[in-house]
Image (cartoon, rainbow, N blue to C red; front, side, top):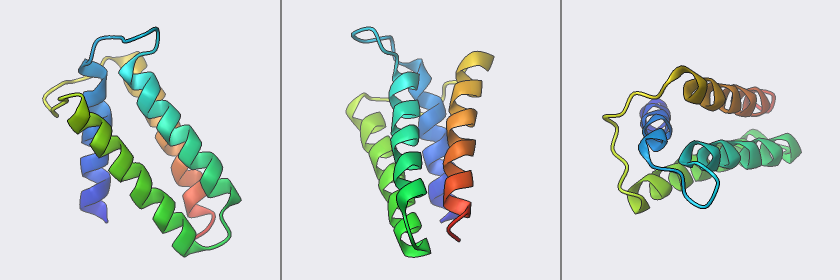
Amino acid sequence: MKKKLISALLFAMAIVSLPSCGGSSPVDAVVKMYQEATEQAKKATSSSEATAIEDKLYDDVEKYCKEHGINDDYEPDGKELEKLYKAEKEFYEAIDALK
């Protein structure tokens, strides 16, 4: 599970290397994925549901990165990192409440 977390975080950080498309940035797309997963986690009633939501989020982020040719060589700037970390923190607070 920890390996998946690290992988997902690297993919999420790498996402910021993509140019903006259609008015929303790749960072915004990943943040939105985290926000949607956070809302699902808040509605979940068991730790197994939380784990399923967490796994789906990792898979979705990984799929998004692969579809957009994102690698993990990019180092995001402070504002981008802040957005990602905030979304990730809120997600894990919701997940941890169920475990």
